[in-house]
Image (cartoon, rainbow, N blue to C red; front, side):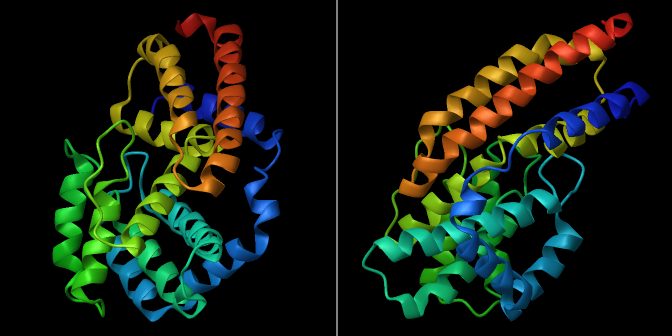
Length: 252
């Protein structure tokens, strides 16, 4: 990464630190903490995390940190949404495990075109070595294939599959808020290393893409809390854009 991007990343993180934590983590603190406990203690997730750590390319903005955050939030969303539906609460720990497995694997083929389909196909092979039923593997892989925005979804065969798919999608799109300017774009910049002039030319279109995510959240909780993530990301992005123009004009 060019040294100029190191400076801008530091400025971006300072901007992010001044904004509030999204309300989701306050209003659903219990579900979030339970999700993290499952993530830290479930033997399947622990084993899968080791696999992903060894196999997920960590230099393209959607690496291990991203996968872990998506898994934590998806596990919380599953608890919230299952609590509102006709799901047996005894199944909740298993549902959390399933959606966290999808979260860990959803970007395992991030550098490929149509990466969600490639990741789903790859996950189907990987998960055969884990203690999942064939239907659970199918639900996980359908969720992975459906996690991209602005694409048609494949049909889901079960209510569990639909729940996992929607929760994975929303957790992934929560990352388009403050996380985007804290980590994601800088990892992508590190990979592509574009001149700052090119980075700035593409900036407005990138902001438009973030804004377009706002109406796409799928779960009731996602629709309630997701737009705040996006609004925070947009505010941070706008502030950073003006800062770059003001403080780094010699690079533009």
